[in-house]
Length: 163
Image 1: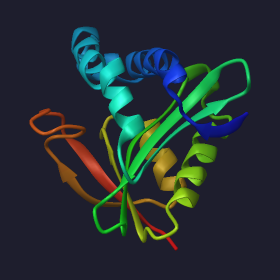
Image 2: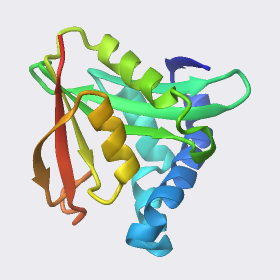
Image 3: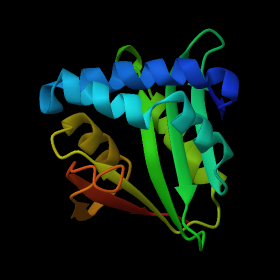
C-alpha cells in the first residue's frame, strides 16, 4: 500500500469508499436514511472535485495498485499554522492495517509550517476516538455542527501539536 495524491480519475472510487465507510460507521448512530443524505451532499462528485482544487490542501489516497483502501483530505488555515483534517477514512475491510496511520503521517509531512492539527470526531465513533488518541491527539473542545455549518451533527474537537 502506498499513499499518493488523489486525482480526478479516483473520485468515483473515493465516493464509493466514503459511502461504504460512512454506512459501516454511522448507520447505527444516525440511521441509513440520514447517512444517505449526508453522503449524497458531502461526498458528491462535485464536492470531491472541489477539494482537488482547494488551495493549501492535500487530498490523498492509499492505493495498492489495484484498489484504493483509504483517503484523507486536510487543509491549512489562512495563516498556515493550523491544519484541519477534514476527512480520513479507511474501508472497513482494510482497517487496523496501518493505512490510517500512513495517511495521517503523509498529511503531517505535507504541511511542515503547521504547528497544530485539528480534527472533529463523532463522540459515538469509538474506533476513531481510539485512533486519534493513539496518534497523539487530545480533546480541545466540541462543536454542534461537525463537517458543515448548520449540519446539526455534534462532535468532539481534538488537536495534536506538530513540529
